[in-house]
Image (cartoon, rainbow, N blue to C red; front, side, top):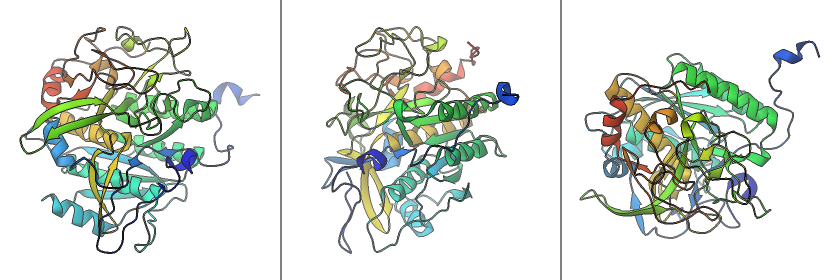
Length: 419
């Protein structure tokens, strides 16, 4: 259960009695790049964490948007935000009730079912499954923070082939999405080379088409649920063609908009932000000046993860609604659609898509300096790696100051990313 659903014993579902809240803290060889679909078993693990009991703090996505200074006068109008869901499902009545609670109209949510997958939530009278929680969580966070955007939910089976097909469908859809949110993944070590290569083809297409792909950095600290004592990063967040999203613990007053503290999310090895140095992908040229360290315990270099971060602690979690009940969820899962929604609002304000975003964000980054457009997170660790001024392998460049980031991006153009 822990391997496939990201939960431990007794944590795989969130339940509450009726009327009460859930609290869930050869010849063609040269033309063949990869072959997927031969590996058995599930491929992706949801990147949320549920905590039993009452969270210390809880925020609605709207409150987080204010705390992170999402640009005023924007709501994602004219943008398409695609969410790729691996199994699970959601109900329209939950969406209507949730957005009504937030004094928002229900966003335009469309579904695309790929490779036999369906929007198939479990029975209302039973506790929601991890897959259902993930499906609901992603849409409610994205829709609350970019209510003017069109949300397109791609359902995929939990197989190599299904996931690749769903992502390809999303990237090549008409109209082209502004952002794609991926709140799932697995350790690089469990991803087959063919699967990695197939996804890279799709991610490169996304970059060429101006699509920003956001992926969760993982919820199991620097070890990423590997039992060898080493440090390992999450895939597809480790791809240099995605924006990798890590997690923080945010203590703030949403009424006043005051952030009291923000630290690396680490509530134990099974509840901590992922991050580190890739074993698969080389250090990208645009990240060379960020001060990415050698991979823990080695002299090897690689792509540094994550790029950015946002609140992910279940103890300072996100309020959602599923099966008619309020729930509280953390993890890099909700942090990922938060960033995808911000991308949509930035694109709306700029009048252009952002595309492959990391090279833009790293243009003026140097080790030890607070990045422009970000709140630098300098306290805490995820196991093997500690926070530090500037970029680090726990929260990347930091959490967003959306308004400041808009100003930064308005003066930047995309660099050559072919290296």
